[in-house]
Length: 233
Image 1: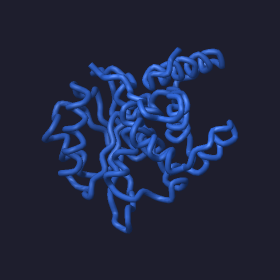
Image 2 (image 1 turned 90 degrees about the vertical axis):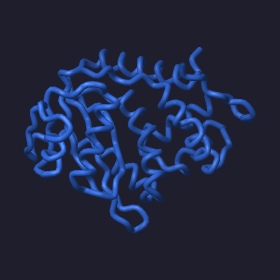
Image 3 (image 1 turned 135 degrees about the vertical axis):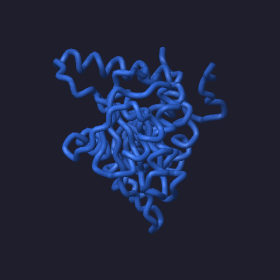
Image 4 (image 1 turned 135 degrees about the horizontal axis):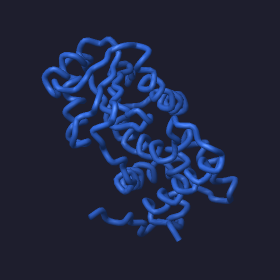
């Protein structure tokens, strides 16, 4: 059973802590911009306080957010991008499903079969079942890893078919610019665990929705966020 979030010995009410963390992870805002937005509401905190709140409460919120139920009919889109950290090249491996829901993200120093195998193993462990199809770019490491990890799964390798995974990196690129790059691989991995969980909750699927359905989706997402932050009333 997941424990409730503990707000003891904090000067501000839980609603303010949760709102600051939500602003930071939901929108491409720097810590100083979040500080200014809170000041506009009469809340005087420093950007360093916002950073500590994000580090302390963000992982708890992410653990409490409900994840999408896995299905054998899912289609996995896999892709990798370069992440330069402290002048060194790293690779961010990402998997999303057919609706753009982020399934997993792993920061690695390699771009080879071993790294692709690690991603597939983590995905199978979290999803508990293989997908109906796997779509990647033309990197040969994916095919080699699939043959060893899940040979029965259909694999399609084409650049245009994988636009969904490639476009899923754009929100992180915006955050990277706002934060002036990440300081360490561990910090990037820790940030992604919360950032993707919040984004999965609020981002609409690619299916067409009416204005009313969009409004209801956002209301439900906010209710789920308040429940995860233990601020629902």
